Image (cartoon, rainbow, N blue to C red):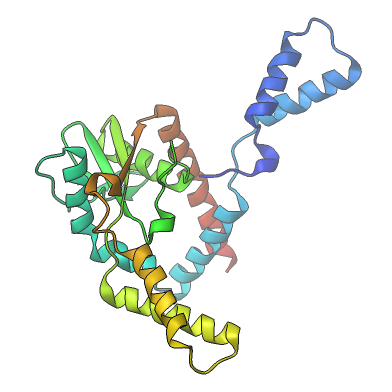
Length: 256
C-alpha cells in the first residue's frame, strides 16, 4: 500500500502548500515551491519499490511454475494456537461464544478470510511469538500492514468496525525446544565451546521459558485489543493500488 515517496506529498508538505496558497503575494522562490507541491499533490499514485519487487517475484513464480514455500516459527505458532488464542481473546473481551471463521470473501480487487466475524464487527487475532513481542504499551496499531489488512477485511465484508487483537498463548513445546536448542547453539558459537556449562544451559532454558510460557499471567493481561474503523478513503486506495499492481504485473509478464 505504500507509494513512491518521491512522487507522493507528505502531510508536512501539504501543510506547507496550504500556507503558500493562503498568501496573497509570493516571492519567485515561493511560487516555484508552490508549483512543485501542487504537482506532487496532484500526481498519479505510483507503486513503491518494495511493491514492485514483490510483483516481479510473483510474476516469475507464475510464469515459470516456481513456488516458494513460506515457513517460519512465528507462522507455525500462529496456526497451531489459533483456536486457543481466539478463545482466550473471547474470554478477556467478553465476546461470549465465538468461533474461528472459515469463510473466504472475494471481490473484484481482493480476497481474505477474517479470523472472527460477528454481526457488527470482525477481528484478526495475532498470537505473539514471545513475551517481548507483545505490545503491552502500544496505544494504536503501529504495524501499518495490519491496518491495511483490517481495512481490506471490512471492505470485503461491509463491517463498520474491526479489532486487531494480540494474544499471549504458550508456545507449543516442540517449537519451544527448537528455540532452546537454537540459543544453545548460538552460545556455543559465541563462546567457542563444544559443550556448554550446565549453569549456562540452565540460564538459557529459564530465560526462554519465561518468554514463552504465560500461565502465571492473568488471562485478561494476555490480550491487547485495538479498534479500527472502516475508512472509505482507505478502501478506495486499496482499489487504486490493486489496479496499479495489475498493470505493472502485466508489464513484467511481457518482459520475462
